[in-house]
Image (cartoon, rainbow, N blue to C red):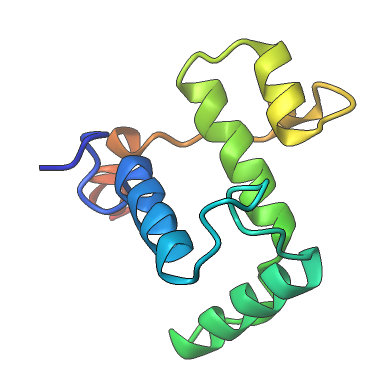
Length: 113
């Protein structure tokens, strides 16, 4: 069972894995959830993961996570002030990005034929 209802992406399970990793790394008391990682470290990890799964690393960076988080919050009907504070957005520019909910993409490839 997936807490979000999505069979692939589940933020609840992701949070569980982050908390477990913090404990295993001895970083449970770190101020930030991702244990004070730098943007460069996160970007390097994304690009390495992209290479490992066979996609171009040029399209992945911390911006992918930032806009993805804002999009998820926006589709979850979070307040714009919450989104601005959590993502350190200085404007509402995240609203200009298209939001594709998992359910709306189901069967999309069949409609292209």
